Image 1 (tube, one colour):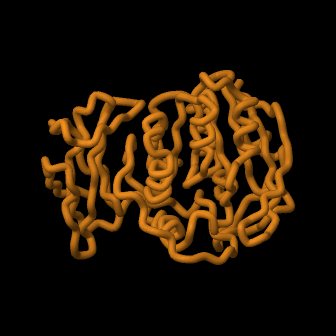
Image 2: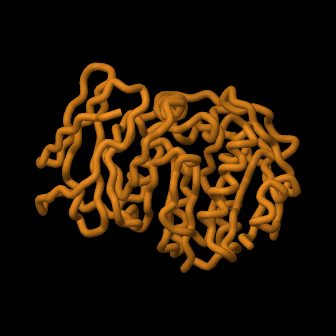
Image 3: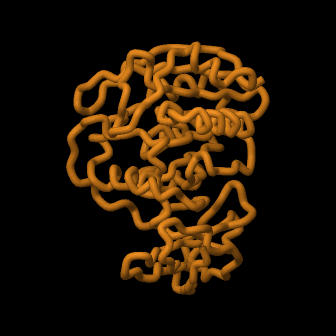
Length: 316
């Protein structure tokens, strides 16, 4: 669907009004050739397409924006930065209160068109505090330990479905220099960037519908906590496995946590596919082999116990 764009050299976002008018943003590569420009995207379509790409000269006062991957920079309406229901961790019954609005900007960020179903998940982040979300962890200790065992700090890691997890913070603190976080929620990514502060330039942010995402590079480690188990359709599961196979370098690792066989059957009103380590290993064979497995019992902010199956799968 064609979208009209207005670029403002001031670096401020254009305003939006009636339904169907969506704000977009143009980000930059590490050269600074993009960044500092604002785009207002106008469309009446329920699902917007990528709207623009190109070079915009930037005044020195414009914020520096970088992108590890470089190459083509795309702009897409902010309202499209939403998370598909089929792979988003849900509320799982915990209560909540209003969550303050997200930071107004974030970088570096690849913007990719999102599925309309993502609106549900964006609303989750907009309706409750981060520490009241059922998947919240003050310190993702299991994830950090398994990642450190799977690859050296000189390696590259991507956290898919990262949400507003503090894992990126801990990886940066531990000395990892090549960290990517991917999520369909712009609000969640904004929260991570705001929390990281000046350290955010050591992290690449990707706002994307995971199964529609096309990786531009490979990674030494792929981390997923509570994304894969939301895929209940065999076709979506197969797409995920194929995507991980393309994105993880030979000899690299996939660190994955899903609800265990005795875990919840639904989350946020959505069905869950539960796994034990053996069924997870089978799902990713033959491209990956099982290297390690363990169980975690996550205690939600509401006091519920959620058993997780964790596996480390090595790329053949």
